[in-house]
Image: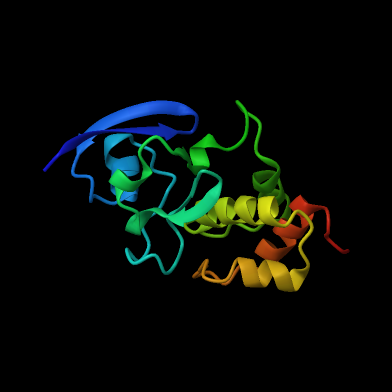
Length: 156
C-alpha cells in the first residue's frame, strides 16, 4: 500500500507517494533523480549506495524509505556548498582516488561519516572504519591517502 512520505534530502523537504518498504536508493534515484547514489549489490554489502542519515552512514539499498521519514538524508549531491567541493571531495580529487568513479560517492560519504566520528584517524583506523566499502578498481591506497589528507594526517 502506498503512502505519502516526506523526506529531508540535502536540506530540502521532499515528498513522494510510494510503498514505505521500497528501498531508499530507488526513491532517491527514480523519484527524485539523484543518481549520484549508486546501486551495487542490493544487499548492503558493497556500500556503493552509502548515504548519510542524520549524519550516520547507511546503505540505502536496504533502508526502507518508510523508516527515514523526516530524517536528514545527505547524498553526494548534498555535499559541498554551491560550486565548492566538500574537503573530502577535494582530497579525493587531489590524491587521484577516483578511478572508474562508481564507488566514489559511497566512499566519500563513508569518509565524511568516519571523520565526524574520528577527526584524526590513523591508517589502521581508516582501514577498519572503511571496511566494507568495495572498490572494484583496487584504488584503496589512494583512497586511504585522500582520507588522511582530508583529516590532516597525511604523511609524505
